[in-house]
Image (tube, rainbow, N blue to C red; front, side):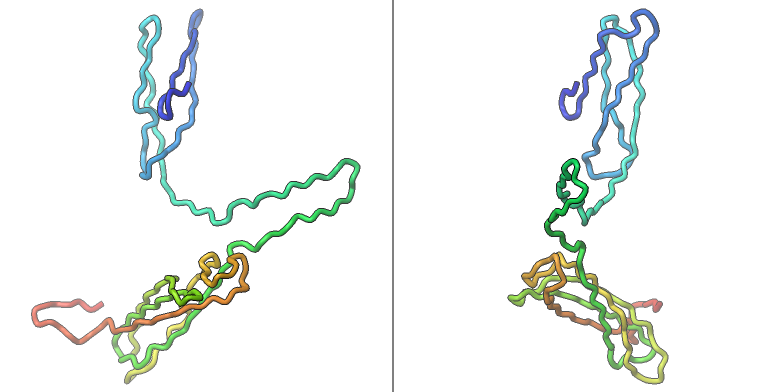
Length: 209
């Protein structure tokens, strides 16, 4: 019998009256905290009977692994269909269904101009989406290390295939999120600067790697 969400009471009318007899109790537990690890099943156990016997119980534990589970595609709602007896052909309009998990992939190339030889550069890419009122929404940020080149002078460096994933459920154009029929507008910003520099403070040591 359940006394409260965390307490069980088990009453046995008779046990082992004429011979040795055992009993077992099976119950389900639910982990409600947020941390993983080994968890004791029982906080405490008390036992009593009419003869004042003493019982020794095991101390079980379970290992809990708290994982973040995302279920982006729930099971579809079924359409009930009945085919009458003695019917060997039936035509039924099952209604509408929509494409799932739609989205787009934006791939960018950018040229970093006039990069000096022997110096690495850092490139940041910031992507936002713009709604019909001109309000911007964050869609991603990436940062890259551009290796140093060994040309005799400054030269342009092309950075290719910078990819952003744009799920359609983030669409702010005002259209349906269950199709690719909407125009989506974005803004992309680039930040670039050298990583390596000749500057040294007179009282500091810097390791170049």
